[in-house]
Amino acid sequence: MHIFITGGSKGIGRGMVVEFLKRGHSVSFTGTSESSVSKASSGLKGNFLGLVCDVRVMKSLEKAKSDAIAKYDLIDIWINN
Image (cartoon, rainbow, N blue to C red; front, side, top):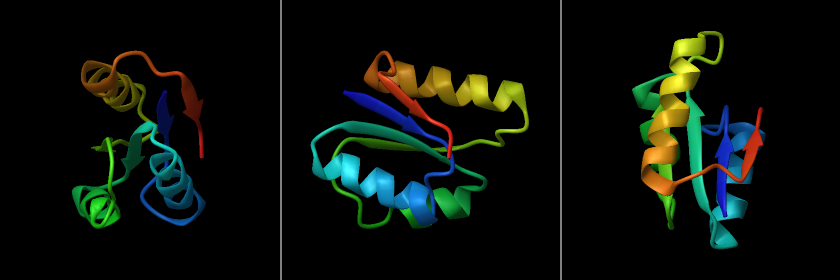
């Protein structure tokens, strides 16, 4: 299953990323900067893709969605965090 989580670089979003990866899912998540995505990716195990995205900007969301689908195919669950 492919799960997409906005705001997955820290807090509850990061916790969801970790838990879904533990369960064997592919996870795409967003953060607001390269730095936050890189930091959040550190130590993760499994199939994941960290993406820089400003959810206030539609083109940014569309690009993140396209990149996630290109890597893991269709998104089964989308979580707006």
